Amino acid sequence: MKRFQNLPDQLKLVISKTLSTCRRHLQDFHLQEQLNKDSLLIAKVQRRKAELHEQFQRKHHDVEAEHTAKNSERTSSFRLFSDPFQLELEKRQKQ
Image 1 (cartoon, rainbow, N blue to C red):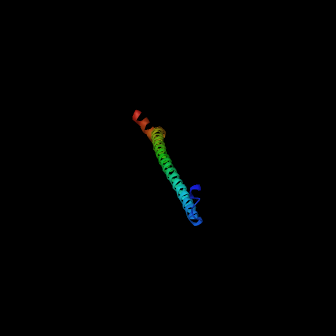
Image 2 (cartoon, rainbow, N blue to C red):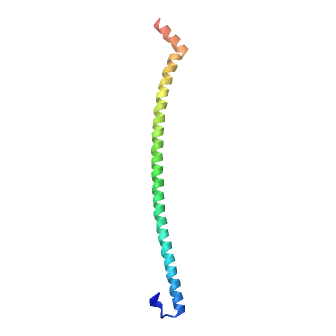
Image 3 (cartoon, helix red, strand yellow):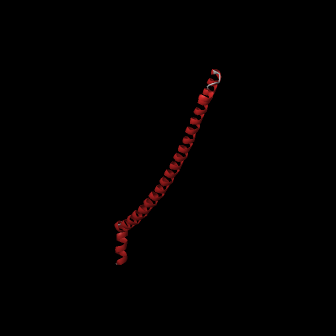
């Protein structure tokens, strides 16, 4: 403020307040800029999380479908051999 030394006090006060306001706006701008960067990063992380969750769900459903198909085959085979009527029918056909 040495260069403003010869100015009237009122003008010094106005300049000081203006500089303060400018500094505050600059800080707000930098904070907003950082918030925008953080928001973009958060959005990117959330998208990636959703993608990974979707991949996991697809793999999980594929594995479940595979197990269900195998269990269905085993159950069908088991029913075929354990059905008394089927066993009786097979016995009669052999005779």
